[in-house]
Image 1 (cartoon, protein in one colour):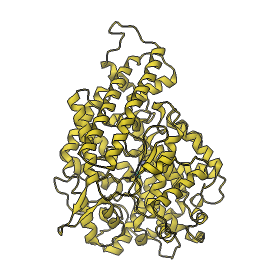
Image 2 (image 1 turned 135 degrees about the vertical axis):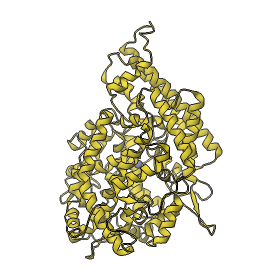
Image 3 (image 1 turned 60 degrees about the vertical axis):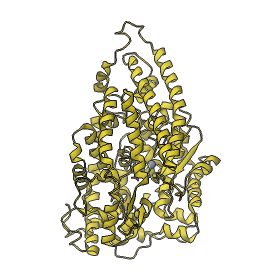
Amino acid sequence: MPRTKRRLTLTMLGMAAILTGCQQDSKAEHPSPATEQQKVPSANDAKAFIQAAQTEIEKLQIPASQAAWAYATYINQDTAAVSAYLGEKLSVRTAELAKEAAQFNHVEVDADTRRQLNLLLNSFVLAPPSQADKSERLAQISSELDGMYGKGKYCRENGECWDLGQMTAKMARSRDNELLLEVWNGWRQISVPMKPLYEEMVGLANEGARELGFADTSELWRGKYDMPADEFATELDRTWNQVKPFYDALHCHVRAKLGDYYGTDVVPQDKPIPAHLLGNMWAQSWGNIYDLVKPERKMQVPDVTKALKAQGYDEIKMVKQAESFFTSLGFEPLPETFWQRSQFVQPKDRDVICHASAWDIDDQDDLRIKMCIQKTGEEFNVIHHELGHNFYQRAYKNQPLLYRGSANDGFHEAIGDTIALSITPKYLKQIGLIDEIPDESNDLGMLMQVALDKIAFVPFGLMVDQWRWKVFSGEIKPQDYNKAWWELREKYQGVIAPVARDENAFDPGAKYHVPGNTPYTRYFLAHILQFQFHKALCEIAQDQGPVHRCSIYASKEAGRALNDMLEMGMSKPWQDALETLTGSRQLDATAILDYFAPLKAWLDEQNQGRQCGW
Ligand code: X8Z
Ligand code: ZN
């Protein structure tokens, strides 16, 4: 429900998708009024219906968001119950309306009304079954899974317990194989008890999806992209194949360097990389092991963590600094309530869901972020990521409810990251975080640092939902949940579990978005799109020089162009929104490849004589 951007399902939902004929056909099971010998509905009826539906949903959405916020920032039995209750009321009523909307399937209506009717049907992440005990159970399970992740802690044999924040820091900084192994394995204990709940949830959500005319939840998730679900999956493969040679080269170099450091008995040179050595709990981005894999020639690469510390930045100052990037582009400052209501620092006295998210409680101006900010360069980027959501939410707030969302969910995830690509040495100097801009002979180091996060992420961004789509469609059976997860980890990322997995293990549950039910393909899309956006904005800002040195800071022209796309919300197919900013209608990895091109040439040289692949 709430999470990463908006609030509850309904609007997370906000994503558009044109129905395939198949989905429309299967909806025939809802009898149209015509077959019941009632009055044939008109185009005006459809318009009135969709307007009334939005008004009604909006009313239910605000308290549901408030309750979800209370739960996420104060996990206990009462907040769990209230947020599950109000979330269920919202989703059940929305599902009723989506079913009622089927009466207009064969009515000729204007384009906006048709789009809104389609968006209503596609608005669910987990669609509730109509039987009350089942929809209640679904809401309970999804709230419980969320809480289990948020409360998750690992306790060592000596009784000392660590939460995810502490373990994340160890994964990033420790170079001790044994400790890394313990932390990696320890965190995965929290997800063992999730497995039966997850399995039950899949069944319930599929029932809800089928009632809406989808084959299953997988088809619902893949159907939100203004093209037939299967065509979208093909588009993802096409884009991934563009990036794969680069990923393979990076993987090869990183494995060789890890072999040098930990020994080739720990990191065999013809096998996938053990997942605990990449500086991140999920091996999803590898920037934290830059020191182990960097070019041997000395490179000056700004250490933002150090700079923040040296300049005395606290959590609030980090957020203010990020806000000032957006205002430099011409966006209005965040409202006073943002500063009063956000959670910036992990509360000491209670369990919360620390995973970063940005919220829009009332679709007006009650914007917030929820983070447990660590004072690091990595988190400085996450803050920009989150504010990207908030500025997007504000830009489309005057659209009708069903259009209040990003062009597709990848756009929402890409905006703050696009801004963070402008945190270049030039920018860091402008804001006084560094004294000198390293010259071009250092670019390779900087590109390596960024590629370890961005290129390394791409296959992870893809595999999470390759797993979930098959889980929802039933192709992966419950007894194979974990096995299939590791098959995909190996296939796409070339990583393996460092220790044999117990038969009770449910490792997907140790990644926030699985118990949190946040679709993940959005991040794959975002990693491709942000480079398309950055390139276009740098051209508009008339930045001279290579795109990896470009910062759009203070460019009002770039800000206007960005805002033109953001304020469209989801009123048009995402291809139109993309075209507005970039002139292209296609997802295209050329921009990310061009950005890192000098690094690819260097990696290919380094890899000569190495045996790559796994
Ligand atoms: O979940 C997030 C954001 C919130 S939408 C912090 N991200 C993904 C993750 O952490 O797994 C951003 C990048 C990928
Ligand atoms: Zn996000």
